[in-house]
Length: 282
Image (cartoon, rainbow, N blue to C red; front, side, top):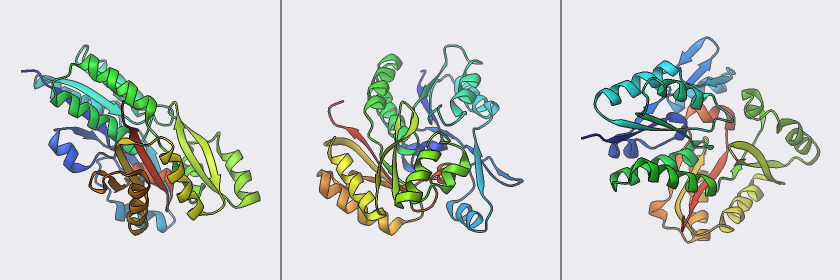
């Protein structure tokens, strides 16, 4: 019997237990430190940050089209169809790589642009997998994903813009943010609008930035799904998680808290914090 299988890139940050439960396949993004290339998803977070602290700035790029093609072929030859969900095409070539690979399997592979990153894309993969499990047809799953995609809340607090500047993923934001940082010493709060990073607001300190994240999320409560992500600050993330669930009245056991992988940490830099929510009623 033909099954619909979910494929994601590792920039979606889908946890291993979710990947295993729904038999997802994960295609790793490429991370480079100088001449050293990690293209197999085996670069640990500890190794990543150790290399970054030693002064070697990481760079990322999309998986090769052939990498997607290999995964698609294995699934299609096993008699399955594929729904591939990838991070935003506005800041990554991953969608193009997956789309090119999909052309080799007409009618068998659908590629969906999440217009987001990390759990913003990960929640779409989770919702797609749940819909597959419930027996929903592909057309209905895509309709649901489009509705979720249009309503995801995603404020991100950065401690620094150095990494996002060097990564080249938000060139249009840099002049504006730099001027604000230089004059007011503020922390930027970003979000995604139609897949592109935009300035959502600013805060005069990191703590005020965290409070602003709570205000922004409270404005769209309640939520059916909620995640908190961070870079290199697990204790602060757990403390903020308690504030978040208290503010929103969300069950603590259902809140996903995770550190983003190397592909996204490259651009977010250390001490970033973000919240991602799927509003209820969608």
